[in-house]
Image (cartoon, rainbow, N blue to C red):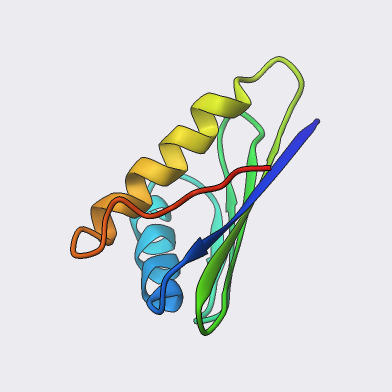
Length: 94
């Protein structure tokens, strides 16, 4: 399993977290509230999101054999769609 995380600077983390989780809840198991989100992708990847006052924390756990960089890109591109007024958001994955 590969883990990567990013703290994305934004004052709208809760809004983006909720929009992303609602969007993906039609396709995969999702649990969320205003502060935390959990998304289980079909390929076994787990995304955990945490909204704070000045940032949105994103952690991805990607199974062996799956493309971690691709999953980072998928999450970042979707969040950028919801954050179109301030996109592109700054993702510093580590």
